[in-house]
Image (cartoon, rainbow, N blue to C red; front, side, top):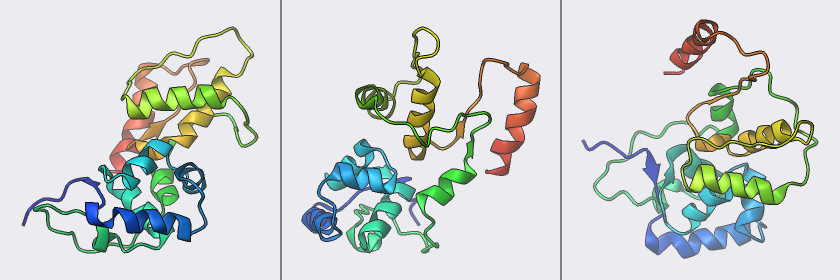
Length: 184
């Protein structure tokens, strides 16, 4: 049996049906769909253009659009795994996130240009370190916390820690190792 990739993509001959499913479900654009489902626009765009996306994201998009993922997935030489119950991306992400002392950003608004730029750097270009610098009190923490919540499904783990009252390395490791180990 061949091992299946962690990423899946839509078969080219199914792309038109996938695009029609978007409209049929009342979404005017990929952007409105990505906002509704809580995935990055880059991920949704990859799905609709037949590029590989994370396995759980592929399943979540298919579920939301009422598509049979096994009927549209391009397998190549891979063998389908036994069907497992599909969990929403929110259920999956909540188990892999430790938000620590992250601030509440439920009322966050604006800063769209900055959010899109940061998301593009991190998700699309794969930047591993991004510094957000400015004078105090202008919303850097809120901006980054909102971005982290918006793109959390793009990552295996999300761990938020404030550096204001930073823990010692030993304490931090004692806190994080059990969290990561429990999820393996």
